[in-house]
Image (cartoon, rainbow, N blue to C red):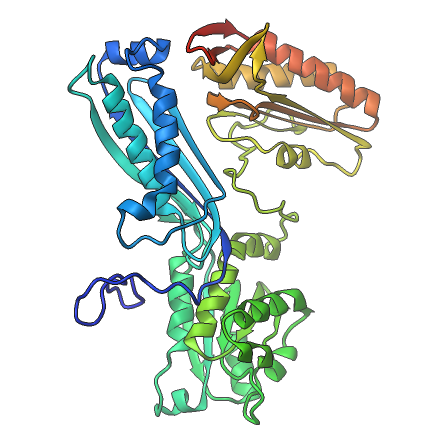
Length: 480
């Protein structure tokens, strides 16, 4: 869609076109899509046991989904060809076949269509594999459930992740006088709105006091992010940097330089911009202000660069801890289960991919001299047999049992300062993480011993089962 709500894939007279993304910055982008195939109990059983006449239906569908993601531009006419970084297709058997496709890319446009195509084609392949058993199998619920990166920020289950209020100040003598249209301000407003912010806009002349007054109004109104456009050039009336320097308490020169560098990839004149960025410490609100050039193209490039950083910026302004490096895995939610002991950071059982580094970082404490982490990986063999993947299932009480086990374990290890546990369920391919346990303690011996004890108790007491899928097409269930 365009800023005014029109279709971007049609020109002024209605002819279809491929959108020009050349002015956009290359950023990390991810997308996740889901689909579901409803089929008979017998078809599900044969899928689960690998007894289909055509072979391992789940494995074939997974490969088909991956191939489809890579060839999306060949079948969706106006999609841009993308050099994908990663494609994952997971199929989970419940009362149907639930499919999740995750795609990541560094590019100028998103991978939403690649994720949707992967999920849809994997579902169609399942139907093809089971049609001899069930000719009524149906594909449904093909939908985008999450995306991140780009100027529009992050979306989850179709909704833009919530960001606090933002403000935009257009600095232009001609715009203020009404002799020229304001194009750059609306571009910034549109980008912030797509990212989930409620946006307030101001239009002021190229005057130091007018610029300061507008920015101070927006800070007082609770805007955590303020974008100014215009007045950053070399002309005698370009005074935005001078106006903002009198307000900024903490300069952020690296951000301004990065935005300038992104613009220079599109036009050589971007190096002449005197854009600045910094934090204003208001009485009740800390705000990041970023001064951008006055062209809509420069604003578009800058907002594409800022998009993936917005969540981290907001967290930092609110006093949050330093974020971990941007990753393609879904974020770790260590607060999914309420803790009964203050040292219990969190316990989770979910089908999300696990980030061991993030979980270990969550148990860092100033009083701890050691952090020990256990990462349980899926290996490619068991007793000499080649393994292709593990499939974990949890009893409905598993979350509560895991919390109870961890709380009980804490009473036996009073020296532990913090603990976090995450177990993945569903299909876990070879090389990926199934279990992460992180423990911090004053001394390394305490941390090592406590971590080993907790891992043993989890395996012995939490009602989880795993199905080993072997390369030869057979499988077996094992109680942990």
